[in-house]
Image 1: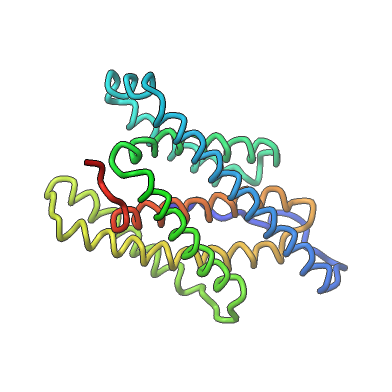
Image 2 (image 1 turned 90 degrees about the vertical axis):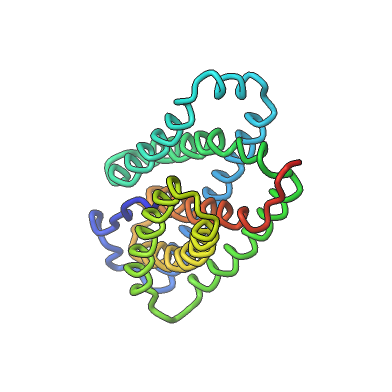
Length: 241
């Protein structure tokens, strides 16, 4: 799920700014986006590893079956708050909420360490990083307009969510495989599309508002990375004996 886009048009345009200065601002903004996204992934990994190694955390989850749903709801609420209020909140508040979301997601992802081996999780992470990096580079440097991808991928994502809900009740292994393959393709495409979208917003955003763009851009790409990782894990993850 991707949050609503940051809207740079709410602020003054870069009147009087030379093309070279615009490129410099956009490049600096993209560096901040990737830096913040990377920090978010580090926060998620550290929290997930800590929770996975904590007996108290597992006892808490076992004693409170609603806790997992609580984490899931908290994630949705945080994404909606950041996406809808990014233009109103301060840069510091937006960053704080992003890292809180990354921490909550880390706690929610901890159970994967009980299902898959650590080696297969690490292997899948590096496969994800390589795939994500390749598609993000493509989205950043391609001259092809990927705008049409957005609507197609969004509709495909809605279909993926519906199919996933249906499979909760049908438990079809064939449908599960199709969902996993579709999920990988959808988030591979979204990575390229989101990268191009964030780059274009960076080219329109005044330097004074780059902090807000960095947060919403990092959140979009972070979600692409995490979802791509989870779907790839279904193929490359090795179950614990």
